Length: 536
Image 1 (cartoon, rainbow, N blue to C red):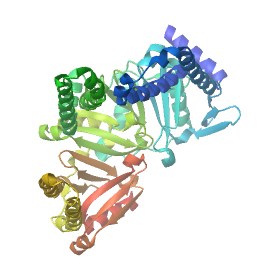
Image 2 (cartoon, one colour):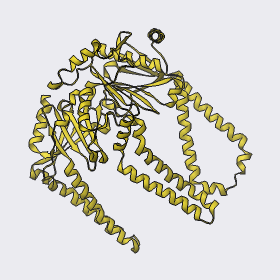
Image 3 (tube, one colour):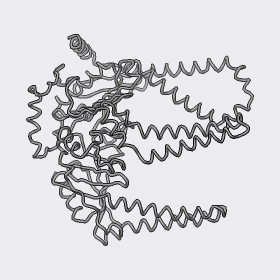
Image 4 (cartoon, one colour):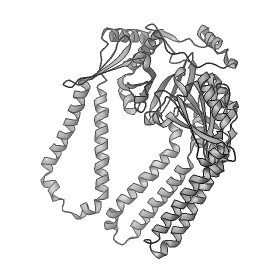
């Protein structure tokens, strides 16, 4: 009861005064970020010149310490004051059909984002924000010009953030969003299921301030336990990261052993500290790249309610995504090398607005699981793509080797020409290694070409184009024909002679996902893609 009273009171006050600022703790976060960047820069420079610093006369530090300490304090105070001024002159407001951001006092800026152009409303909470009880609201729009950056980031109290997200969502619905994807015939019963959920089969959504939002304790369609997250982490392990970690760890140990064995331990410790630190950082970075998925997707949960998908996960950083289905441009089904061996699959989505920030590069929908579980979760969360695992992809025609022979021949010739030129300047004792490397590179390239030939392919049904690609791992991309903005096909002389071509389709997404390749295929498949783009 108290929670409901508090929420109504907060909603009322914010409606009376729609212009508001970020939470004051944003000053601490941004100042801490600046200080951390300065600290990393200073420590890096100190490590690089540690040997020289230890040999130098540092008496000036004690003599001028009375000036250095106040100087540091002054710089810190200036950074805090600058952030406070920015915070004080930044306002966010919700008008009838827009979100308005006002910045500056002398040079004022006013950015207006139409409600109907907002594609995603996501919440994010890191450790500092958990301590302060705040939450970051992130808004993305449909615009390709801003597809590589989050359009609006607002730091608010958690209750205010929930209200803001819900109010924007309510106004989007009131303005009338675009219709969702055409559902396949075998999923026509989904509307009835949603009606049953709203009539009490599943806990009903709460209504607040005239808007409908899922209850916080509502049951999720998919919820991963610790075993599921650990399994996902295992199948997500990158073989490259493991190799880099082992090499970096070996380099760190070797540097430490050489430092200890050296007679002049004190002098070499200073000289080798930078090398050891760099190797250790590389090792830790690659180790984190290997195990990060074990903690990133802690308590992963997802649900589909009407035309939106709700996703939550995180331990050190909690995120909540609200994804309108009509903004989803494509579905990715991935397999790492380990997952390909274990026959496990995971799914990601490409949608307008998401994929811009680094943490959103992988917009997960389904964690690694067996194929039958993948089908089941797709039916629950994204029935519009439920049939995509059944679409077969045809391997590229054998004539692709003729098309590949031209670029491979040019590459091999350039490799040997570069080796021949380097032989004139490389010492004679290294000539053998030079030519060995020149011979190995084309062989490795041929191996990659063979792996790609066995992996890549193209398939389609009446609605969706499906492509496959990869080398050691594999990725399937499933794109409704109507979501392809435009497509380009090209072929070199050998490909034209054999009647094949490859293409590039362009989607409304961030730059990392906007252009997607179509493997070599016959001209009949090229014509089919062009025709179905026009129909759908």
